[in-house]
Each structure stands twice: as structure tokens, then as C-alpha cells.
Amino acid sequence: KAGVTQTPRYLIKTRGQQVTLSCSPISGHRSVSWYQQTPGQGLQFLFEYFSETQRNKGNFPGRFSGRQFSNSRSEMNVSTLELGDSALYLCASRPQGAGVDTQYFGPGTRLTVL
Amino acid sequence: AQSVAQPEDQVNVAEGNPLTVKCTYSVSGNPYLFWYVQYPNRGLQFLLKYITGDNLVKGSYGFEAEFNKSQTSFHLKKPSALVSDSALYFCAVREGRGGYQKVTFGTGTKLQVIP
Image 1 (cartoon, chains in turn green, yellow):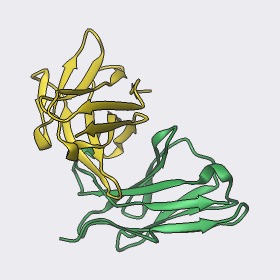
Image 2 (cartoon, rainbow over the protein chains, first blue to last red; image 1 turned 180 degrees about the horizontal axis):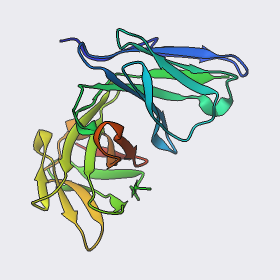
Image 3 (cartoon, chains in turn purple, red; image 1 turned 60 degrees about the horizontal axis):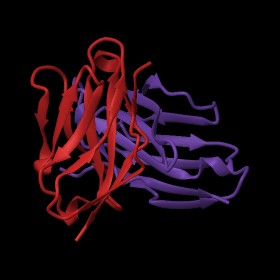
Image 4 (cartoon, each protein chain N blue to C red; image 1 turned 180 degrees about the vertical axis):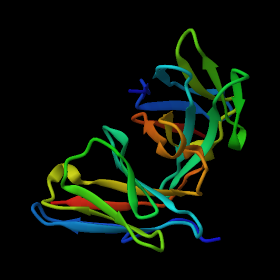
């Protein structure tokens, strides 16, 4: 079974632009979570989607948004980029009914904001 | 809110020596604690978890963690470090229940095993 895939792997944007990141979960997984990883803050939870609905949300400004499609693929959008948005963005998927300890992480998208 | 703290940004240990990566937690109720590892250019991988029961939890790659309620700690340990253990380690705690679970991670500890 293929793992969680994220595209693109690397992205360079400038301040004020917007960006869309994509995550394809493991086949059959309906839950997708997004995390932001930075050296000083570690991993911070952004949001989780299940069956096209946002089920859980972290403490990020409204510039960060996401959605999930009927095939469980998810996208994350960041508008009006700031330098502090430079980070590794990870997504993770898990099977329905499984605990968060069984979530599988993708390799991440490295976003650099100049 | 539940939280975990990793007091060391980096831990250096010689190959073959025992290693410890520290984690303390602050939770209300029973803690559900995890350790994850992130190898360079690879995704995060689950190592082990503590839910209830034995205070010594065994996980993948020879790692184990010791849960200490009185010290609110959940330190990651390995009897003999390998160079290949060099990676970024995250302690984490589960919040919420059922379908509304989420994971709160610590800031991470970089483990460097020196040959």
C-alpha cells in the first residue's frame, strides 16, 4: 500500500502570496491532519478533516485553511504569506476508528517564504 | 490543555552508551503519551505509547520509555545507542476522545550519536 504523499516537496514563495499544499492519504484512510513544524515550536496541530468536514482545529489564524475532497485527498491553503510561515508542513492520515497513535505521516512540504 | 515539554534541544551520546531523551508532561486526568522519531528527509514515525499499565513501555528499534507519575515524566531510553539512532525525537500527548482526538507535540530533541 502506498504511503501518505505530499506535493510539492519544496516551495519558495514571497511575502503576501498565497500557497496551496496537497496531501493524498493512504488508500482507505478518511482522516487527514495537518501540522506545522518549525525549529523553535516543534510540531503544531493545524486541523483535521474527516469525510470532507473539519473535525478539529488548532490555534492558527484564519489565513490557514484547508479542505478535503470526496476521495479523501486534502489541501491546505495559506493566504497572505508571512516570513514566519516558513516551515515544514506535514500531513498524516489514519483509518476510521483508529486512535491518533496510528496516524501515518507524509514526508512533508518544505515552504520557504522570502 | 494538555502539554509536554522537552527540556533539551540536543542530546549527544557515544555509540554503545545508554541514551535518555527527557520529556515531562502536564495533563488533567490519565495521560496518553507517545514518542515519535523523525529521520532526516523522512516522515515522522511512531515509536511507542503509554496508556495505562506497566510503567516501562517497549517500542520499536529497541527503544523503551519509563512513565513516572510522581515526577510527571516520560523519558525515552535505549540501553545501547547506535549511530543510526541519530534523529529528531518528539514526545507527544493525546487530547480529546473518540473521533476528536488530536496530538500535542513537544518541541523536539535532536539526538546525535557519536561513533
